[in-house]
Structure formats: structure tokens, C-alpha cells
Image (cartoon, rainbow, N blue to C red; front, side, top):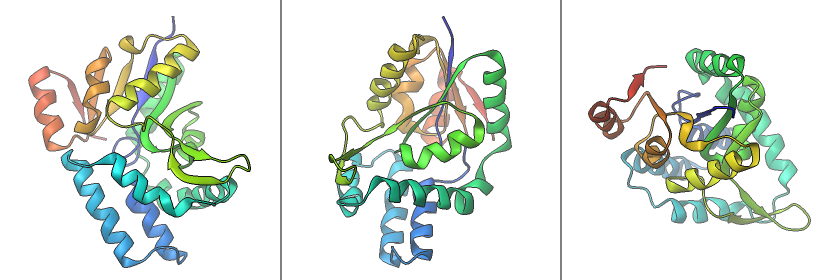
Length: 217
């Protein structure tokens, strides 16, 4: 049975929070205000502290997408990634992905962001699989403004990564997972090899108590 290597995206493979980078891109193209930027900055701070109401934030942030064609978001994310995200992709993350690919491991990004935000990074790094928060679409492939459940957050990451494990035939409990965030504690504690990368303060304390590997990328 193949082993799996799972990678968080924000502050792990990418040094920055991609939500903040995306709203800055929206500001540039005239789709977001300073208030929008402040709101996302506040949500990112809540996420870092592990106190965010992710369901409420998802409902509020996705409502504006209602009626938007899926292809428009795909195109926007491709443009945004090259201009705003690419400079923040970590060299150590690239090397870790290359190492696991060379070993023949199943490699996947497992992120709370949408698959539209994660797929440009996956293509860059040669990662075939993306486990992410998914957006509901209607029969014309327009967004409804609602997320599909469960969100890829907290225990939802176990559910969504578990579905990939079942599909591909690997054991999630024997996987390695790289992440920076205390909110990923459920999946970090679920796998055989948790690797803590650029950790927030709460996760660093927990990792030190558990003897988990801590890396700076």
C-alpha cells in the first residue's frame, strides 16, 4: 500500500495567507474595498488564534459569488496565483514535495481554501491531488453562493482526506501531514507522522509537548 504525504497550503507551502493575497488582488482589479481588506484581515487573525466561526465566515464570503460562472473564478485564480502567490511559494516546500514524489508517495494538498485557489499551486509543484473546500454549483456551473459540506477545516479535513484515501487506497492513519495551524490539530493527531511547519504559538506548544517534528520553511 502506498504512503501519502499531505500538505497544507497557507503558511506551509506558501509563506502567506492566500485569502489576504486574494483580496489584495481584488482591490487591484476593482472588486474589493478597504473595508473588505480589513474584514479578511480580521478573519485571518481569528483563524490564526483558532477562534474563527468558519461556517459563518464561509457563508458571508461566498454569498457574493452567487451567479458567477465557475470558469470566471478559474481564470481569476490562475491570474492571481502568478501575480500574487508565486513569489511566496517556499523552496523548502518545493523540496519536500519533490522528495515525496521521488519516493512514490501519494502527494496531495489538503487545505481549507477552495480548490480553485489550490490548483494553480498543485500544477506548479506537480501535485496530482487537491483536497479543499468545494463550492456548490448549479446545473449551468454557476456558483450558488454556498459551500459544499463539510468544509475542509478542522475535523472536516479528516473527512475529505479520508475520502481521497478510500478512493486511492492509502491508509490515512499512516500518512505524513505538514501544517502550520492549530486548527489542523485533528488531522495532525490522526496521521502517523505530523510535521509542524512555521507553527502558530498554540501549535508550537502542542508539538513540543508531543515531540512532533518542527520545521521552518
